[in-house]
Amino acid sequence: MGNSNLTPDAYAAFARLSDDEIARACEVQTFHAHGPGGQGVNTADSAVRMRHVPTGIVVVSRESRSQLRNRALCVAKLRAIFERRARPRRARKKTKVPAAAKRRRLADKRLHAQKKAARRRVTGEG
Image (cartoon, rainbow, N blue to C red; front, side):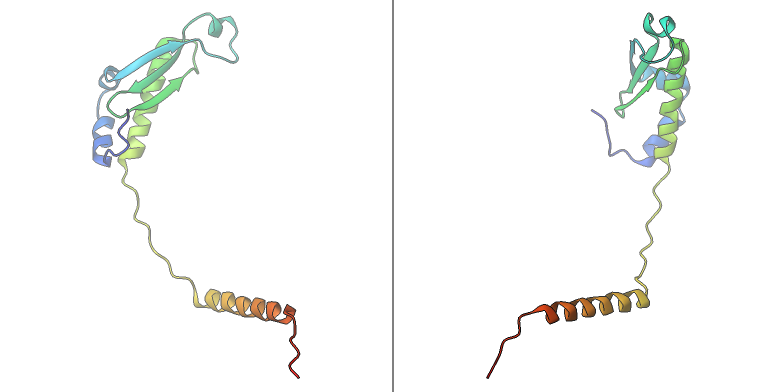
């Protein structure tokens, strides 16, 4: 199973590895690709699925008719994922609701309450 709780530093370490080291840490499956390409795609196991064992990330490449090229594309996709996850998330800045928006919302609530009150049944006292 994958480690979704890895730190950005761990992903940065994976991103610094060479292509060969990334490929060695992967389980590779080959299969027939679907879609356009005709016999070149349908008769050969040219599509590649790679699972990076330490992280559990799975990527698939079936762009090329060459299995070797698809393996290289999988490694490139993994590297891009590692680099993206290596960047720490930006801290969210809390923003205040503007005073004018608060006044507008409260005025709308008062108007709505008056409208509802006007629809109520009038009780006759007397």
